[in-house]
Image (tube, rainbow, N blue to C red; front, side, top):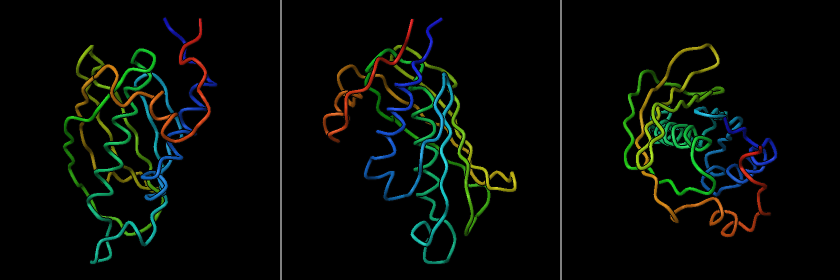
Length: 161
């Protein structure tokens, strides 16, 4: 079985978290592994809708992110991946606090990947759950392209012998 290169994982997490949208929402990928992603965010006023609760788009963004990156480690080096769809079930509102988002791979295929993600508050209450389908597209949205676009240093190989 292939082993993930810890240096690559540290580098990709750094690259992801420097992304403009990640900084805008103040969300951070904290952990990546085969079939797994953990994202965290501390809610702030910018995450709220006009009624004082979390905006549904924040839930959608968090689920899309955790589901997308949950399949990353299962794919070949520098494989392109795009989200085809996302389904989100809002289970409970929240106004403040620390949110944990756990993404898990359901299937990592040669052309289609499916993952799920759940958003949980600091008390262990489930706030949202969703699924996402991604399409594997060679040459599109590759990590090498992200490295160039963001002026990041090249990453070490994804896998080690």
